[in-house]
Image (cartoon, rainbow, N blue to C red; front, side):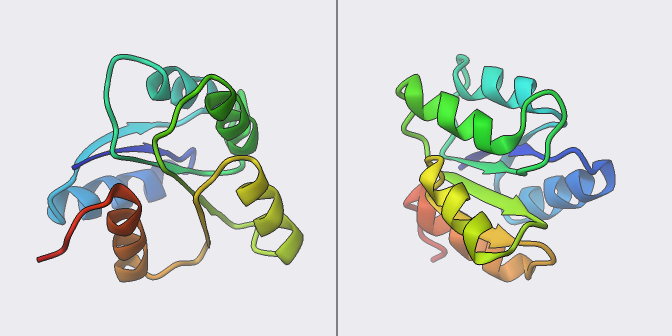
Length: 122
């Protein structure tokens, strides 16, 4: 399965890249919102998008809203340090399909991505 990771924390992006690849995912990583939006609507087909909220250039919430407004149906999981109830509601209202706050458990993240992508761990 293929995942787009949009994360501006380079260290975390590397951890996500290697962890997801080790779990069998084909991973593309971008570090800003504009690149994420372009990739989401580009020629590459993703099974799921892992989107940080606080990205430079265009924040993740704006990316999700614009992508949904453009007709993109790929599942989006927002992964962010913003964990309040209103933040979660805003994230989901933006078009995200799931929301996970940092810090997070890697096994839970993998399970959520797999569920969103419609895959099976067996």
